[in-house]
Image (cartoon, rainbow, N blue to C red; front, side):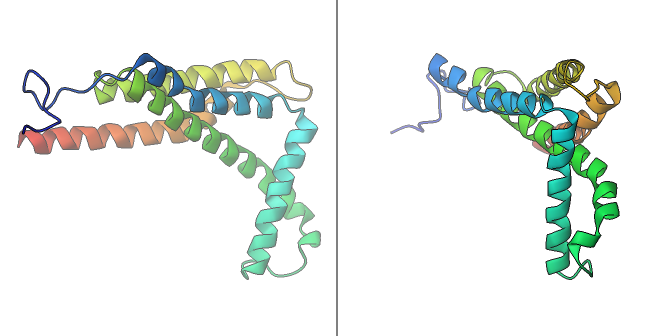
Length: 178
């Protein structure tokens, strides 16, 4: 019997097309993450700050338990305030990185036959455009502002991951051709 990965033409590099239902379902994670980002962005500034401060308190509590910080976490008000900005920005980068991964998943199922580089760059473009619309959305949320610098922060981690993936892909091609 033959190799099941060989197509009718005998080319082992042929990639199978997924059914339309699978293609559509593959976008559900991206839609879910996009909705979550939208929900977080719809939080007024005071609520958003409180969420960041809660995460900062948890980090300090964990750090105290692990011996990185000494003293009572209730005394760390200044440190919590100092941590709020980086915690917020790290959360944004993380949620956009998760969004990027889910978009890549959808693109993988939808455009399986296109090259990897095109899918990586398309995913980056989709995330960038969504970050732009998210900042526009924040213009209408009390106490929030839409800033292009926030788009850049949101997309920083995604851009780094895309560059690493592109270099890895290029390296694979180099070794396959050697």
